[in-house]
Image (cartoon, rainbow over all chains, first blue to last red; front, top):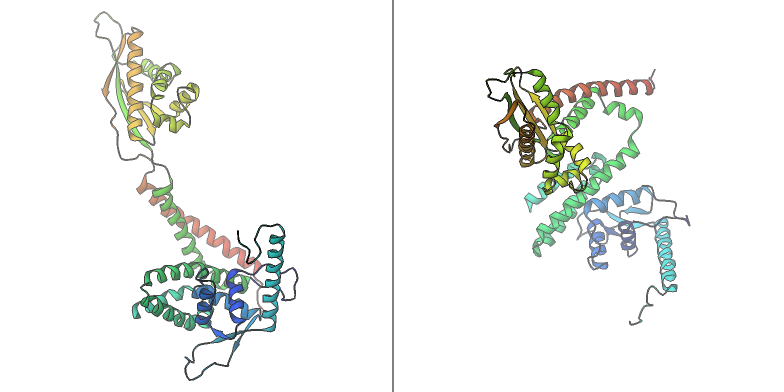
Length: 123
Length: 282
């Protein structure tokens, strides 16, 4: 599936895996296993991405230039040189922001319907 | 560890070659790291379960993606040679045939009761020992409403019969009689006064019961008529556990031959379509 241009306002929602991969890379450049661990820990184990799903999405994101492969390594002495690191591109950041904005609007709409309690409110 | 990694490395071959060349090493590294973490927490079985689910869904996805992006008419033409097409079609058809025969086609069992129609032992009666008209009349009468109605009424008490009919047979006698008529076959044994009453259903016990019930009702009917011919039951039907349909060996042989014939025809047709549509390079 080809992702739409990042500036598209009619962008369809990202899949949970793509969204969480982009969100993980928003914290900095990471290798595949770090991305998987980050997604799992940040969702308290709610979302687990297997190697096939991870690299299938990385392939698409690289093709769509939403992420890039980087040569810089955080600690070249400590790291396995076969590992590849990935980082968010400007277009990727734009897509992630657009998705977060879409979520924010949906959340505001749901709160307007009193469907969701505002944060901090008790039942 | 080494064994799990070897199995995973072997399973990675299920991915398209280009995907594997690009990400295979990293995927192995990721699996290795996850395996170490899972071993520490005694979660190896769960890791394998999640890995296999991920592998299944992602390999299908990657192959479809590869097909969508790389397949052109020319590349398909190169890949789908006559031999490959033939083998793929023949194997698929044969597998379908075997699976359908073994698991999909419903089993049909038959029960068979034999009766004989002979003249009443009366020296003054002028009835011949064997009269083909009498036998033919009996064949038709057995399949008539006169006989089937009391049998259908009797069978209406059995839940299995109602299940086959899809409704209560006692409340829908006409439909029960019609169905009963379709479930039976009456044949004369050549040049004898013997008749075979065969009943077919998905339940061997019910098949035997129907055949026996029809024979009994016909016998009583003949006795009430004071016919100069008497009916005796020679053999009662017993439930036979071996299904008469489908004939598994026959279906497999026919399926094998049919698959080869159809595969040849389809492969020739597909190759002909490719030849027509693929531009010839000059």
